[in-house]
Image (cartoon, rainbow over all chains, first blue to last red; front, side, top):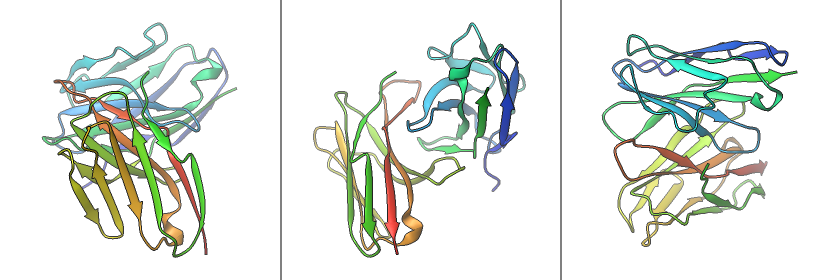
Length: 112
Length: 112
């Protein structure tokens, strides 16, 4: 079974530019998560989708971050405009019927 | 956002030694998970715990769900070089959103 796919693996941008990340979850997983992991910390939830609906976006900085999962499968996370403090690894995870979340390899973002 | 307190922050050991790390919280969780994260990769699930007092093993790994539901520990016996990485505990909050709260991580270095 294929795992969670994310792209790109790395992205370097200047502050105030925009950037987008893509995630393809494990086939059949209805729940999809985006996490932000700052160096030296554990992952922090940004947004949770159930199919194509948002379940929890309480930790998403909505003035600059947006995410969508239009067809209930793939998802994109966008930052516009980026700030220096957005430098982090952005992890996507998906979950099927059980409690276990399966993570992708992440996108490492550097904002200069 | 809330994070679990994990200790120790880092460990530097010799190959063959046993390792113990723990995670504590001021909140009650109904599920505890232990993940390992290798450099440049997403977290990979090691062990899942579902009941207070539960003791579960996975090869050389053993984890326990604390009786108070506010703590958990992970032991690794006879460490090997490939055990190197960052270990995260994660707790599931109660409720419908199935949200994972991550610990601060324990960096493990194993010297051959």
